Image (tube, rainbow, N blue to C red; front, side, top):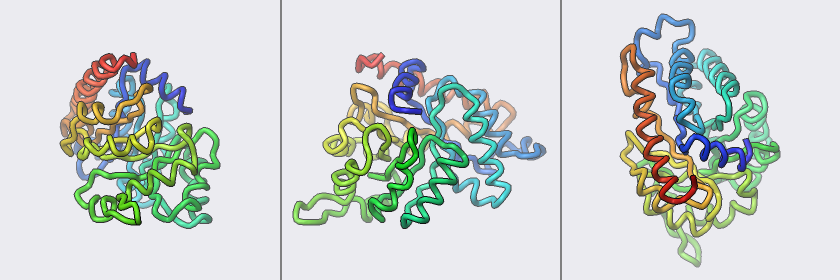
Length: 276
């Protein structure tokens, strides 16, 4: 999905919601354990219930890799099912970042073989660890800039160099020259919504993937206040608050209800900022 298609999907669905498929086999409803592939059965039900409310889905690969070959099968079936839906942006939340020849193999796996639209990457090994992913036409890289976890400040907020900029600012100063607004996004955590203003100084038009709204306590309205652009420029991820809204037979219905609450708030914000 290219940038224009993503923007058109946001406007058509009046939503910039991404649903994170952090599907933990220990947390999915117990009645699904009788299924041949419980995690895929769970994912399929969530997708069926919410795909008209979301513009993107983001499987976190850790929840699949931890289950070995069975987990990879669940992931492959999930991405194949997502690709059969209309106009959904798919993100492999894999957080890779390695030397060039290793990155080339990761790119083949996620952007080639599994055909994700995008992949999350760590930029800290530099340009040559990122460029193999940018060689895939129509695909995106999503670079970690300022994350939402408690330890983000250990390194990302450190001030370095003669300009005394923070490390995440250095990432934002250098990395845009590697790609463009057509193939590069940045992760910016919702739990530090005020910091989005600093991020927008460096990447005023790039899309931002924003985790932390929902179970982590980030404010949707504050994120939009500090981060929205004329094209929206935001993809807001919610995972646990939607996936685990219920652990009973009505889990998909409850997931839809939670997703719909967010979508309605997003629609109002898009109208407020004259994007619809």
